[in-house]
Image (cartoon, protein in one colour):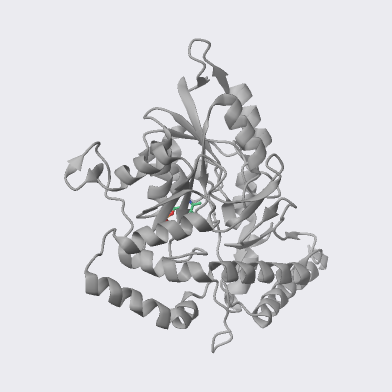
Length: 408
Ligand SMILES: Cc1ncc(COP(=O)(O)O)c(C=O)c1O
């Protein structure tokens, strides 16, 4: 708890204070060699993060947005393709799809997990698309364009139910790019493989963001792509570095999308702590559950299916009174967030695509009801009790008000 009794939504200052002794030598080392872009520190971090994710290759890039974009391009998405994702995500997912030259399209999310609903994906593929008899490609009926990839988003740190998605992708020959930007270290029990698998290791490619507030965050912008496909990995190495495999020999036109050495060094230090931080997040989620489960009929807590080990990037509750609850907590000095208030299909940026309210009702309800409570490594049990006491106080007042006789 801070001096004035307030509780931040996220405490990045204390975390970096604790790591100062480990982090400062990173700057010194990079300054002394002046190897700011690429080089051995980036190579080492890539190896270590690939190992952490159980993938053969990891390619550091400049941001999570670049990671999704390069993943799509390297895996084979072409200009004019349709790429299917969910409307309940950060806009970077669809920006990356558009930047890869494709058209984002959506299927709704599951009511309980808030991730892509595999049944809705099946319906989409069966009812809105058809297989071209001439070449076997899947074509979107309305857009008359090939559907080539699926981007499930592991929102809030919980992996999407991947088995049915991978099965559908196999059936229709679609690329799967996992948007794992919020899910460093999250695990999924695959019934088909009969083992726990890491986020970013199940699709053709995985994309991570190391934006500072993520479970593994840089001190600036950074991202990475993970894959077991050597060809895809080489292509991403080209794309991130102006299409060059040797300095000034450009095989294709690429981008300036490299991971810099200072960020890689910082991420290397923090990666050593990630498993423990994720453990702390899971323990805090469990304690929130103990404190809140079943207490109030109108407030639901995160649902973690038996096949999921979430890393609780965010701890998100749902209530019809979201805005009032947030206001109450703010007044009591408790930081919260809304992830995200407007589903992507209803953002102004996509107005020209012609989506309307009611197209994806689950995502729309979720956007109106979700509230992210304080969640970070180092959050204390006392702070959590205080958060829940304030929620209880809000719920009690709301109940009393609803019992007041209506005056006429
Ligand atoms: C689901 C999702 N996808 C993509 C991104 C983009 O990552 P970045 O901000 O590093 O570009 C983010 C980052 O917040 C994200 O949460």
